[in-house]
Amino acid sequence: MRIAIASTDKLNVDHFGRALGFFVYLWEGKDPEMVEYRETNINPQKKHQWAEGLSKLDDCEVIIVAQAGMKAKYGIKQAGLKLVEDEGTVEEVLEHFIKHEEFMANI
Image 1: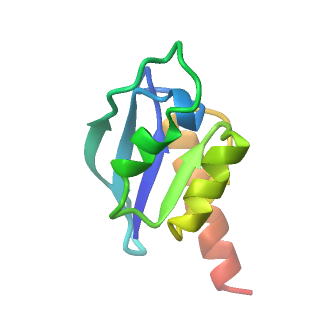
Image 2: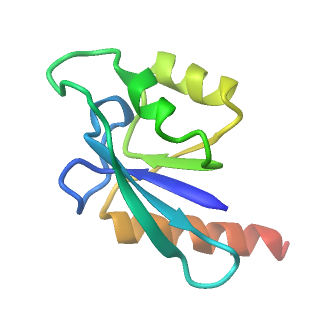
């Protein structure tokens, strides 16, 4: 599974539509592997640029963000992607997501 995490400063999770990039991880049930950091071409001062970020993530199944606007949420849903909202560092939210997935798989 490919997991994208929105981050501008490459440390903390960011708002979907304002993120200047996304870390992409590959997780296949063991330790996640960071594949790449994908930059977006957005102007963080403008609103409603979520489609630019989404266009960079067509091979991902999950997107983790601090927040996402209503239009972005709709676009993400229409693209068939799972949206997770969480706050913290990139490493923390990735760990939260994986622990949750592992827990739910064992119920």
